[in-house]
Length: 298
Length: 298
Image (cartoon, rainbow over all chains, first blue to last red; front, side, top):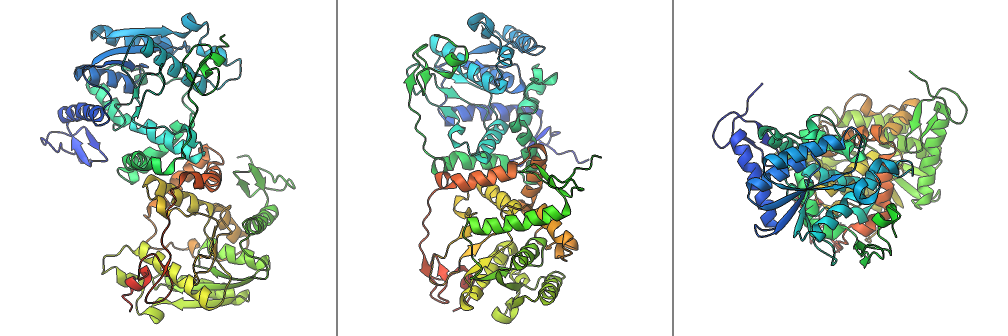
């Protein structure tokens, strides 16, 4: 096996950044990672050092790496962990997040869904609801509510290149153009929404994993995955896209950048009406928001 | 191994039509194949029994199956073979086509590129041209010219579902929206163009191969592939899409149908100017058509 050498210093390479076709050693990869996070934040004007940023963390490699990078880059961050009560999973995730925030002196906000709203995620199984979609509704609602109530300027999530590309592709294949909003920034569009940003969109899953390993950041991915995610079609697409990437170097990044540059040309303009939920006052396109309908509030 | 039985007659199944989730025996598959070809022709008003149809054949499984199906369905067809002179390949293809047309009493037109224009495909290698793109220019020009000059009402090609889906995906990923014209019918848009139709778009590569095998139609695919096609990115995508199909049944057809139904929503309207080539009079978007430029005519 040929050991590739770091392009910067000739030391032993630990990873090849495929879309740039460069191999880097541990030291230069960690620099590259932080530089990429920072340049993404600046390029898309996500937030500045003066902003209060809420980092949504799940305990997985992506969000833990994001938290660590933003801390090292000296942004003004707090972490948010939303406990959905998934058996044999959520408790372990929570412990990982608590331990990291404790050791790194990061303010951690924990939202417990059962405490706040009376029910954990898995109780929606009885109602024959798709748990992944319920999980999405709850997390989007709760991270926005907390950020708004506590006066944060932005919510940062750990979405990576693979997440974005697989989601775009899945929705293109299924003709769900209205769901494709894979922009680096979702601006504030309602009095009670907070801007959402994705600083890791130009980093892959593999790069996030390596960053967390090289920094000894413990993440739940090292032990288990969310029991509900395994057969998600976007996960199947991720595998396929990685196999495609092995054969056509840089295709994932090319696809995403083409999408960013040209999607306004090819996505239909769908104007959802922006209203305020009659029950909770947060954003909705109908009279009652999907979260209030889910929990039968009001 | 479980042997699946034909849904129609309980005999031994030979194939599962994935997007319909039905298994069929030899007899019912052959009926299904012809019915699909005929219903596609009718649905998109490709041609009728009164039309003169020119079938573009390469000697491969798709175009040979198309030729056979149109013959069995009693359409008024002639075949066109374009000899591009690819070494160790074109001659074998030509023999296959000649033999089939001879045995089945089909009028065969052969266009020899060197005889007509002084050069075979591989001579463009020296000019550092991408041969696959040169091949496309030549074949599109020549099939249209012959169909026009000989008074055909339509040109039928053997493009199958896998061709269409991989081509759409490749161009979506690369942001080449202007190239995506994967419609079942390309209407006549210029005095000297002939309508082009694709009767096999709802059949997969695998279904075409099986049809040709069960009918003892000899095709070049049984021996060799075009030496230039192996590493074409659309071929890599086809492999990936077939692996995806194994995990998500019917995804290829769903993707294609969504594209057909919704592409007008999401593709940019690009209006190429339609002009006549100053040299040959056939369609072009500039002053001289790409074919005349390729052969430095005029």
